Length: 394
Image: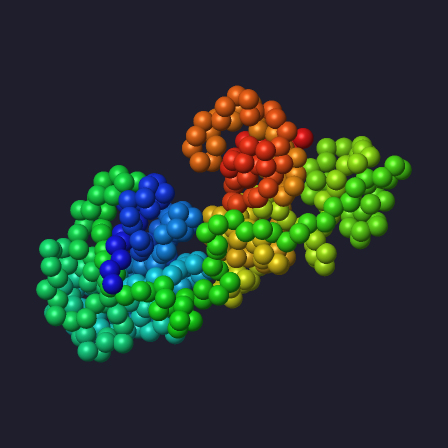
């Protein structure tokens, strides 16, 4: 089998991942980090946008370690950086920096072994990226035989005589959606299937359906004559503040007969969240819902809920599942909508989420939300996907 992919880093700039997908790219290896403290500034964005477009990803770390001990520290940093990410392809050690070559074959092999073993021991599929010269002259492949090779050889045909799972065949590829050159790769193994069958990469609980899913049925209360918001809150064991937040009520002293009041989920503890709501991960949070430790740089960052499943939420920017009780609301940073909510398209809206122009007659019309997926809502009457930012409650 063959699957065609790319590998990218910050040097590719902003990538149009939907265009990359349309160009036939089937996987992406994305640089997450380098050295013992530097995160690629585009890693989180690239990983999230690639997966949103349907391109499965792996990650790689560019190594500067000059000893086995330093390599272990870099591997630990790499693992912290990718924790919580859905990675269907291997985690790679990129061992090629010219400053390391004088260390010699024995030392470089120890560095590779230390790094790759640490990644493997953490439950990931580890792979070694190296060029032809390094593989033939600077690394002991027999000692590294437990790990697949990602071969870098820019040629019409690879001449490496050892086995390899991925071949980087050019650094001058051209792909729609990417400005300038990009590395092109061919994978010869079905890594997503191999990794899932082996239970690697901590994928359980991180798989995101490609199509919108129906959320759990929501419960509403219809306001009756004489009702007050405080009375409804007391009846259902919640607070006025929570009902105000959930229903975007402007004045808690003014509700009307027949109004639908969204109630907190049964059995929920703490705030009830919605798809599209902006939140932050609490500083006290320890682990993602997938079990990996939450790194410090993630906490306190504003993110948006893409999906909710049980007591977990999938966040857009870090594209990871987080427990609801580890989230806190961002505040009035934008509307949060729910299935069944009556809305209208704003007069300022320009395009549907599918790219077509929104005609004037659609704007200002009352409609109802059928589904929500990420930052988009499917409306019942016009049966079209509209960005949440282009909607307002009615």
